[in-house]
Figure 1 (tube, rainbow, N blue to C red):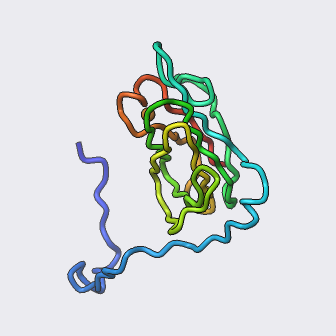
Figure 2 (figure 1 turned 90 degrees about the horizontal axis):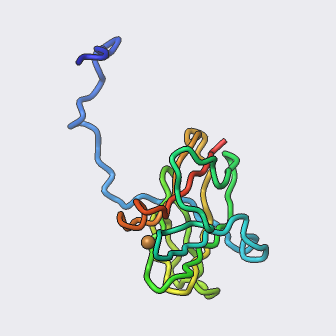
Length: 161
Ligand SMILES: [Cu+2]
C-alpha cells in the first residue's frame, strides 16, 4: 500500500552519481579510557546458562519486562561483560557502538569500536558504551548474538533517555 508520496520542493542539485564516495573506513571518536579504567563499571552484564535456558544477570528475557538498565543520552558508560559459562557468547547491542579496550583485565593492544564482541569463556571484556548520539532514544536491546541463546532468554532491554 502506498503510505506517502515524497516530492522534493525543487529538483536536487546533484544526482546520487555526482556525489563523491568516501572510500576511507569510518573514523569514530578516540576515547581516553583512563578515567573509565580507574572506576568500577557503571553496569555489568553477566552471561549464564543452565538446562532450562540462557540468562543475563540471572534473568531470562521476557517481552513485557522492564528495561534492565537505563542510559542517559549524551553520556558514556563503562560496561563489563562477563561470561560465566563454558562456551563463547558474542555480546551485541542495538543502536550504539562500544569501544572494547580490555579483556580479562588486560589492555587490548588495538582497541576498536564495535557493536559485537566475543566474550571469552570464563572471562570478561571491558567496553565504553557511546550513548552520545542525540538521535538514539527509546527502548532497545542487547543480547548474545547466537540466535539459539538469544531466543532462549539471553537478551535484555535498555532504555536510552
Ligand atoms: Cu550465547
